[in-house]
Amino acid sequence: MAWKSKSHIPVEAKPSTLRQLLPLLILLTVFGGIAFVVYQVYLGATKIRDNTEKRMARRNLVFTKDGLKVGVKHVEQEKYVDATQNWVVKAWNLGNPTPPVKRK
Image 1 (cartoon, helix red, strand yellow):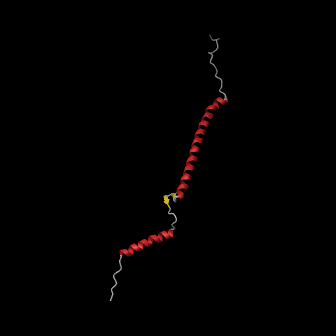
Image 2 (tube, rainbow, N blue to C red; image 1 turned 180 degrees about the vertical axis):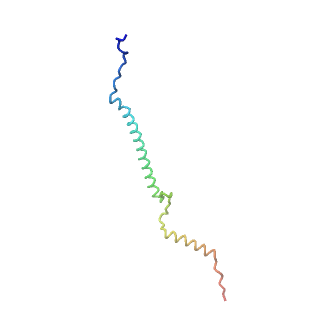
Image 3 (tube, one colour; image 1 turned 60 degrees about the vertical axis):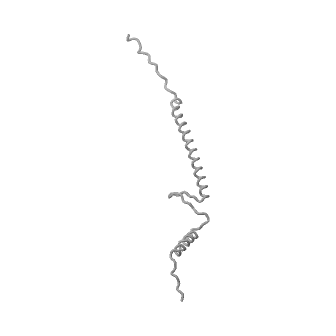
């Protein structure tokens, strides 16, 4: 049976270029959708942070690297120190009464 041809093996057709690129296009579409959602979440979080900072600034609260700083409305540093020192001086004077004055 040497004269018979070899067994007939069907030759598969080479896939088209579109068929080869389809998984890549699907992957890029999925990653693009995920990136869009993450970007929108980032924008929302940024707006929330900015609005919160503005609201807290109106109440004299400021976030810094050291933490939260609370400001005092309408009080200047010099007036605040003077008032504090005034109370300390009064307390000191009341704690150390002067010796009684002797009259002749």
